[in-house]
Amino acid sequence: MEKRTSEKMILVDAVTFVKESAKAKFDESIEVHVRLNIDARKGEQAVRGSVSLPNGIGKSVRVGVITEDKKDEALKAGADVVGGQELIDKIKAGALPEVDILVATPDMMPKLAPAARILGPRGLMPSPKTDTVTSNVGEAVESLKKGKANFKNDNSGNVHQVIGKASFDAEKLTQNYTAFIDAIKLCRNEAHKGQFIASISMCSTMGPAVVIE
Image (cartoon, rainbow, N blue to C red; front, top):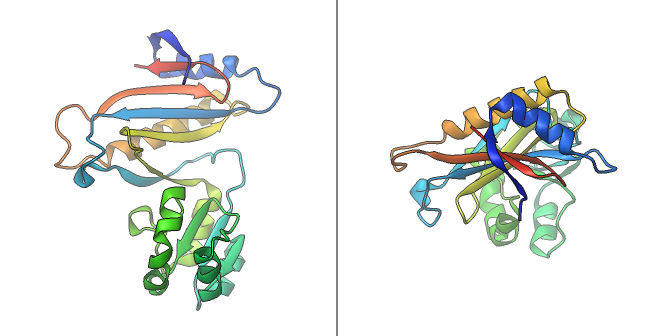
């Protein structure tokens, strides 16, 4: 459970507080947690999208690509794992690739569908909604490597996202925060009634959370 401060802060003060509270011996991640006024049980209210964080998140993102015809393009763009049917067979057998994100070309999706029960719970199932099902494999890999992040609400209606490291300067964290919140707002649809965002908090990996006004 997050430890929280008792008061709300404007963004500039929250970023300063969270950076100063990151006192671990490692470079702590800076996390943003958004509580939404949605019913997570209703599919039409689900929130899922992507955001290109202008300053990345301070770590290397491992990208896997499932394709038959564009393996060379994927490798040239910097993909960490590339494969076709043989990679799908490994996944179905329980041997997951060591990646953070999976991209697939449209023609591979019917073949990948049986592995959805394995990839879905781990957040690895490619989806058109997050631009991870695409024919533009090279562009997708490069974008993800530069800081594009996919997000979705959890079972409690919350969305969580790392926006950088404690070592980032305040301006970079603020830019990433703004890009993420703007992307969340764009996910609102007709099924969402009333106030969409209930609250936003920020914290470092080991530090207390502060609620942002």
